[in-house]
Image (cartoon, rainbow over all chains, first blue to last red; front, top):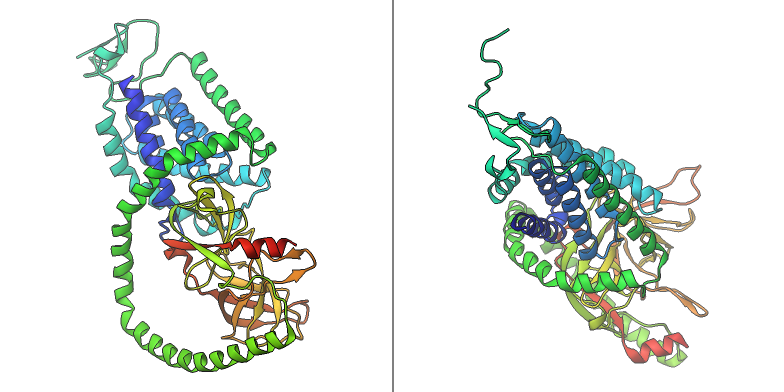
Length: 173
Length: 318
C-alpha cells in the first residue's frame, strides 16, 4: 500500500514537473521527458502491471493538467509502462545497460506512437519535425536524465527483499 | 560440466510454483492472466476516454471532470513554475551576457530610428483622428483601446514537437473566453483555444493550426501569417499576390477585417513580425515571404489576454 502511494506521488510529481517545467525546456530542438523516464524506471523495478497502472495514472495527470484530449497520453504511457515492465521481468535483470536501452527504445516508440495516434485523430502530426529534426536530441536528453532519475527511483522504491517475496522463494548461497 | 554449477551465490530459486526473477531483477507482478487483464482494461479505458472526450461538447461530463482536475493540479503547477523560474532566469542570463555588447549597439541604432518614426506617427495619428471625426467613420474594435488586458503567467507547455501551445494561469474566472487574442508587449502571441475555471490553453502563432490575416504596414499588401515550413519559430506571410509590393524590413501587423457579421478574432494593428526575405518563382501563384516574429516564443513567461470591453462586445455583435 505504501509502495503504491509512493509510486502515485512520484508519477504525479513527474507529471507536474513535465507539464510546467520540462516541456518548455528545448535543447537543440529536443525536449526532455521526465515523466517517461520515471515511468520506465518504475516499470523496470516493479514489473509490467505496476508499470501499466503508473503509466495510465501519469498520462491522465498530464492530460488533465494541460487540458489535452483525455486518454491520449494515458494510452501511450500505459503501453510504455507495460512493455518496460515486461522487459524488466524477462531480460533486463542482469544487464547494466538495461535502463539506458529501455529509455532509448521507449522514447522512440513513444514519439512514433504519439505521432501515429495524432495522425489518426486528425490532430497536428509533424512527422518530419518529430522523426528527423528532434528525435535524436530527445533520445539523448532522456538518456542524460536516466542515471539521476533511476538513482532517485531506486532510493524511493527499494527492491523487495527475499523475505517480502513470500515463502515460495528462498536465497541460495 | 563445470563444478558447483547449480550453486550460484545470491540467486533466488523458486521453491514453489511461481517463477521468480533472479536477485536484483524485477519481480513478476501477478499471474499472466491478471497482468494481461490489467493492461487490456487500461487500454480499453483510455480508448473509451478518448472516444467520449472527442464526441462530447465542451460542457460535457468529461470536460467538467477535467476542469475540476485541472483546478486541483493548478496550485502544484504554479508552485513548480515558481521554483523553476530562478533557474530558467540564470540559464537565460548566461546566454544573454554572451551577446550583450553587440546587442547593445544594435539596440542604440534601433532606438534612434524608432524615435524618428514616433514623431512621424504622432503627427499621422492626430490627422487620422481628425479625419475620422469628419467622416464619422465607424471602425471595428480597436487595439488596445477597446480591450481589457488580463495578465497571466505561463504555467505549462505541451510537448513542443507536436503542438505549440501553452497553459496560462487565467481562466473563465478572469473572464477569459475561447478565441480571445493573446499578446505580449512585443506583439501577437496567439489565441485562447480552451478554457477551464482557473487556466486556459493558448495556441501559439507558430502552431500548425494557427493562421492570422495580416497586412504589410508600409504597402498594405494583405496575406495570411502562418507557421513556417521549416518549423521552429519562423513564420510565413502567405497568399500575397505577386503584383503586391513587400520588402525586407517591412513590419507586419494583424489586419482585423470585418465582413458583415463576420469579423476577425484579432483586432487590427497588433504587431506580428518583420519581413526577413521575399522571393517569388514564375511557377508560384503567390510571393514567398518569411517573417521573423517580434515575440520570442521560447522565452515566454507571461502574456496578456485581450478581453473585449463589455460595451464594445455588445456593439460588435449587433
